[in-house]
Image (tube, rainbow, N blue to C red; front, side, top):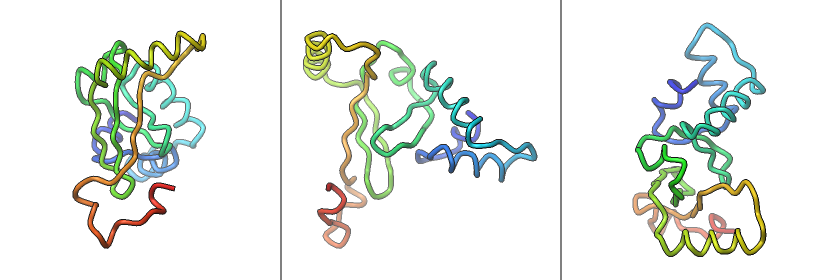
Length: 132
């Protein structure tokens, strides 16, 4: 499963991963098994789940693998290009204060921003529906 995702340049849904796996290998997986495997890979932070687009991708840098790093993702709504980097200290402090103030537990330490990358942002591609 991790090998299938590692070869992908963009994130995939669990159903897309299932189809890709089943088309690549003789062994067949069902979507429920893929969800369980993805859950385990997310838990150990080898894979990230992008909640806003419901897709998964492989962690590729030490910052992404560290459980202590609060990540900021920018995701292109057109091509699904992802940029992941540690969130600025000020943003992390604000988030941690909000979490503590509201007594939240099991907080996902990532922020996802959706927009259009410079490659996709042209007047012909721009539409308000991408941000609705």
